[in-house]
Length: 331
Image (tube, rainbow, N blue to C red; front, side, top):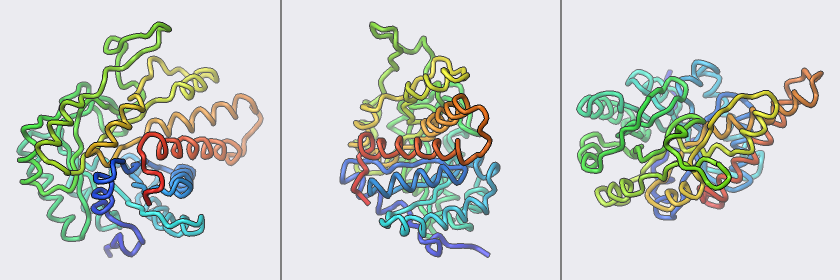
């Protein structure tokens, strides 16, 4: 039997995006796979009074079980009430690649879905996206489409090279599909190694400086579809303190580099109203776990290392909401 997201106390992204575009900030879209991650996300967003998009990838559904994840999201609404601040919560499918997957999520209480047809031809992308939109809108669920391809690896999403979004295609794509938001490619990428050393410059200390985002493409897109909600994927900044901690305690992360936070803040002040962050959270948790296990090698209680990992993730996400996305006090 189908479950409506409204029964779970969730909201779709339509009004949230309108407020974000008008207000010059972006809604945080944080991926979760387990209890500690969703606790950290919700605690951070309640304490900063930020709306939030809880993202579930197809990989997360395989790992954690779709029923368990849905019930975690159901509990999220009650949990934030207990924390003392009712914030808007969207449950979103990240990188859905088939109509069947999107339909299953809609039927099981998701309030938003992404259909990523960017690996298809342009016309096939339109056809697939339109099919998902028609089903989703019949259930008052919002849909994110994608034009352009991001390089990198995230769960089952793999691409070796960028294909920047063509501004001349966006009007046609949006009008023919009916999507509610559009993920674009302007230089972000998935994973913790977003750029090769050859793509970067080095400062006087030898630190890699990544190439800037293509704000010229973003500005052209905004001219074509003014006020339309834009989404950035692959927007982790890859904090070097976490990379250093991981490597200090036995890790092997080489040339890990992300998107500078000042560029993300600039994007959040534009029509970019949803920014996806996943790898940063993985780095924060891994750094905390490695530090505990290295300093307390006899520890075997998962709560004693997952607890600090959760706390570090919460700290990171509070920083993102306040200083990067600008979503604090927007709930």
